Length: 126
Image (tube, rainbow, N blue to C red; front, side, top):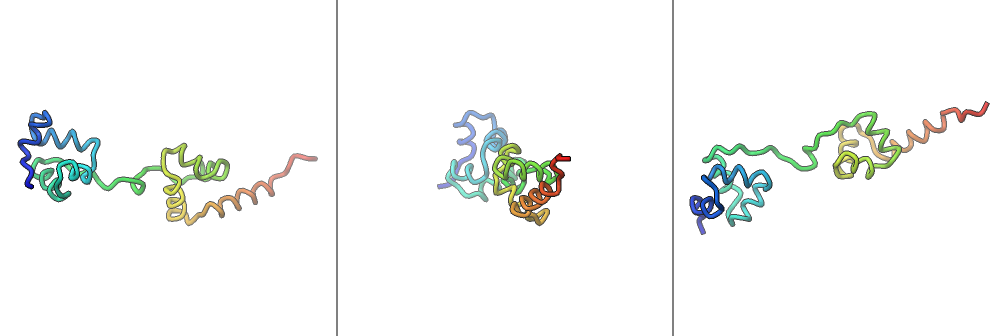
């Protein structure tokens, strides 16, 4: 069944097709839009191109912005990956992957390094 786009945007109460796409794309992916209108993702992409609606870049966990810095590593060794991930609003798996691929670190290596540092610290007894 071919979608008649002029009927769709009118039925949904928009003033035009471009306005419909701009509004719906704020909260929906191409996949969910294709399911909503019962058509292919390529049909949605074609309509976006025709209307001049820019496509977003790839998203999800691979596109989340956070730095693997000393503060993150300290946080992971002190509270664990799950707590550090929740604090930054990302999935624990994202932290694991980012640590491994960007720094070559594993949680086990971080914990071992933290334990070694604790053993080296003077305990204050004089």
